[in-house]
Image (cartoon, rainbow, N blue to C red; front, side, top):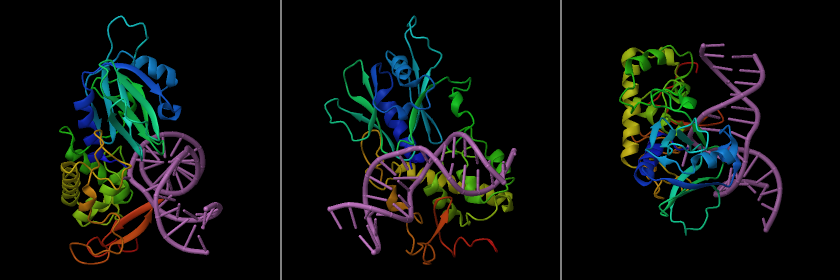
Length: 292
DNA sequence: CTATGAACCTGACAGC
DNA sequence: TGCTGTCAGGTTCATA
């Protein structure tokens, strides 16, 4: 669900509300939310108690918060960041302590300043939290295999174009492969392909270098436009860290618009089953390859 | 190595 | 009213 623009919106909110604050206690109400943490829920909570959040970072759809601990703490600590993945329905909410618990509140963080608390809420429980070590590049070891995202200043355009053009798979699959380029999900893949006037069914290795380069430009245009509006949200399921819904859905050109007119050529947008979900595209602007 | 499909969950909604 | 089936923005793991 949350793709790069939504996660970046959450990151910015986190950086503002929790940087520099020291965690007093952590309450894990649903162990599934910390299933990826090796030490289990008790270790997760004990390690974070007393930790000071330094900042909030992001790569693709992954968030992490580096933290420091006071010297001499008796907990055996070889971790220095908390990774957050929102999955399909995860939310990080900054709430007053008096606010009623959310229906799917799974983890609560209280701070030693007695101010607002941080809550991890997740209906479908695909999301999760874990503690990890930062590698020398200051990226958590567990997500080092995720490619840089296209808004990262160190993203290598030429390398991406070369790798994309070697993929023996269809274009949309390649855009969704987080080890090739991160941050793109089902919505923005469809929006990008529409903007680029390319069929997602086209073989990735059929793109010329200029077309592949131009496609990367479309990826950035779509992500930046969404980011400027605070990300996409269809309903209350996704809200940013401040509790506000994004509203980019008004700007979607194809996603969820089956049967409606393409805003470029007027043809009816088509929905097609794809990997247990849906793809939306304009059959005229994005002509599928012959035989495909 | 690459490619594909199933599995992991809950809830909303359409249709009967 | 309640049942069943379908769908939902993601990732990982097993299998080909």
